Image 1: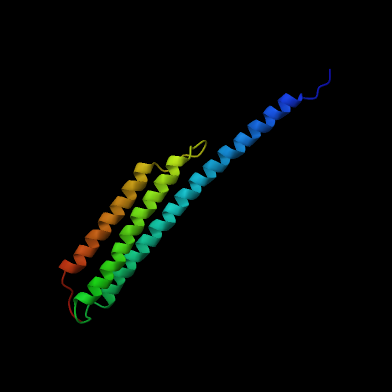
Image 2: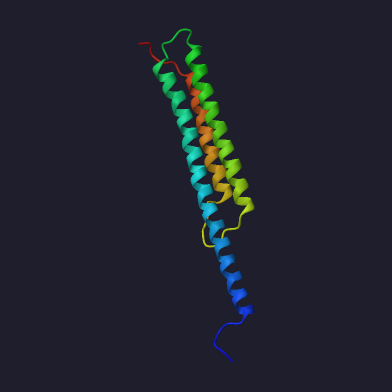
Length: 135
């Protein structure tokens, strides 16, 4: 009898290697999902920042409600981006199983997006309630 592995053992080894590669691919996809979530959160923050900046730069514009409306639109877009990011991020995480990676919990994604959306909504309310000095 030779020392070579039988064809069944070779097939099992190949199956094990294929399963390992699949597990690693799922872990990479989970990590990519987190990076995508972070990217969308940055995009939402940029939208909110554009709105806040627009309002700050053009707050003396007449009529006074015009810069506030434009700023609010950007903030609402940012809030929607926060919601969409957590929705899609949680959806991907629900479909995949982590193996060696420890992904961000879905609840944490929801909390981060929820707090960012809430803070952005407060900013939108603040630009309508606060009075800015002219000039």
